[in-house]
Image (tube, rainbow, N blue to C red; front, side):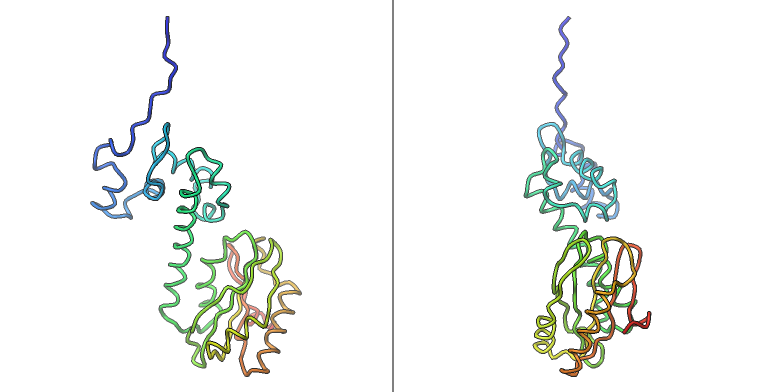
Length: 235
């Protein structure tokens, strides 16, 4: 007896009932009603010969243990190892994750005034907590603690980053900032400041005195929370 072992081709999303198609659902009932996989499928736009965009989206989520925070950490090349995920799809997914981080940070900047280490942590944590390497940022403020802008100063390794103080103060003077707030992440999850963290904080603080620019705090963030060197009495 002859048995057809060819796989049954998947039904492309465009052939689904309209009320089940992710794009139509978003338009008709709102984005909040869609699952993570459905939202991701919209970003992917298409699947491949044997998988719909929704099935491919579910495969991507499984790669991240169905955790959006973990998805934000995945390198573009790892996503591209999945069949049907080329550079365009991988870049689109990771760009969306970065926009989500920046949206959270932007909500904090609406108040524009940073009055505590907790305020700074709320701003930087969405951007930095799930990063796999250390990144060092500086927030520039005026005399009233109003945020003028913030800047990514350097990117390091899993355990450290080098900081060029000249870049920090060049930007501070250009922005007419009178106060600085420092922040970096610990990919290990530890919130304990290292001796290197303490040294660079005091180096920047001492240099700031030459320009009459105050270092308000140095915040360390990870997925588990934050540490304020000011609150810990280390500044």
